[in-house]
Image 1 (cartoon, helix red, strand yellow):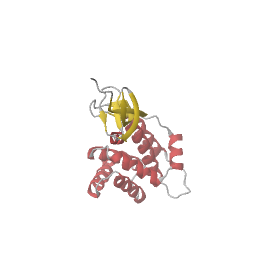
Image 2 (cartoon, rainbow, N blue to C red):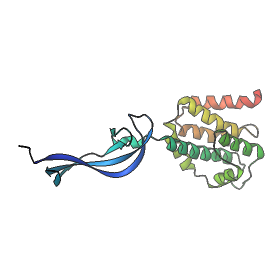
Image 3 (cartoon, rainbow, N blue to C red):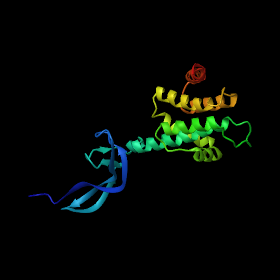
Image 4 (cartoon, rainbow, N blue to C red):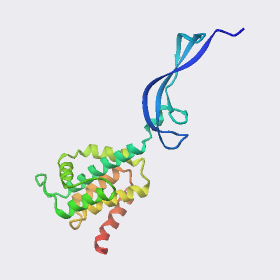
Length: 211
């Protein structure tokens, strides 16, 4: 005779989620679900029992992952992190080249170099946006953006990033002490060592001379 009672796990969808599926290896849409054990009679849930840890279920391959997988940035999130980080870093460097806090001018060489760094990377950007960023930059948020991005960049990627920022500082001539300190600040936020930072800045300073 077939048993009419037992325990079964039922899953309730909590939210939809975009994440990097460990099995597919790419960005996927899936569901965040909450498993719950139920005492069943026939097919009817009668008594809720233990609530189990939540899972992320891939909508493509049905693979179940720990919610920690949501902490891995998707391609879209990485693009957003990079754009925000570059804009705030550029504004950070441009502002450091000013002679005083009341100097709101942006020289043409620096402005063109700053816009060029963004547009070369495939981002839409212009001088109006640069002026807005310089006027509204938040130093702490700039550092936070870079710390979040640093885990996704290789040592070479960090070097290239800092080198681009150094090119902006050097666009109107020799790097000032304030500009150098700003670049060091960015390098530290990226998790670079002091020798690595100093090496990047030393090489960058030689490039205009070589040109």
